[in-house]
Length: 240
Image (cartoon, rainbow, N blue to C red; front, side):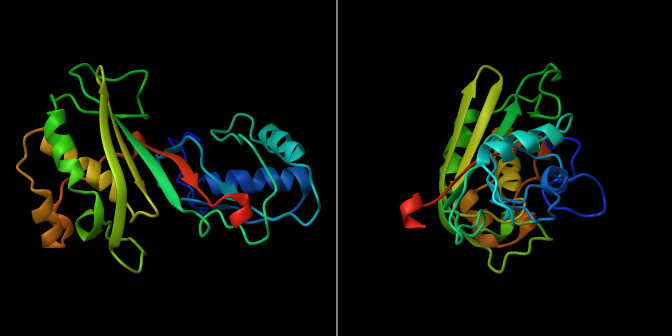
């Protein structure tokens, strides 16, 4: 989905959400009011390459039929269903998830973005990619991630384990990739904002940021437009 004009994943009264669009498509298809649960609840403006979600239907339906029908009712909407399949009763797109993967796209050049508008963060100041790579490796591992946590985060604990982070550059495009079992609200965007400021020459020390245990110790919150939910990992079917 393209999150540019959506309020995010979560359904509420403020506008169209990914969840509400999917639920409406299901109702139009089969007349059942369901709740669709996702692997991640993205914010307004955030995109997804391959979000995983699940819902329960009372009436048996073939997966191919569900896919075609939902996409028919999602025509002209910024959401598409790539595939549907039946899963075991104890599968849950959120709680069964073993790892979540995000990427963040930065366009680093003096000229404004046109084709990538609303789909990347334009940073006109030249970035030191080696400084960002060095700092990024200090984010890996288990940490009290309060400095990268949004004030409205509802997670019970700020302790998170980042499995991997990588930064690659191709021309004027810089890709940040993050993998973990779970993330705090705004954690990826706050880490990217901090790394980009390091790339600009700001003398942040990641170890000192973690030690401060305070949001004000870290850098800015990167814009939502550059963030993409890439995929979610689950146990093999036989393990569920």
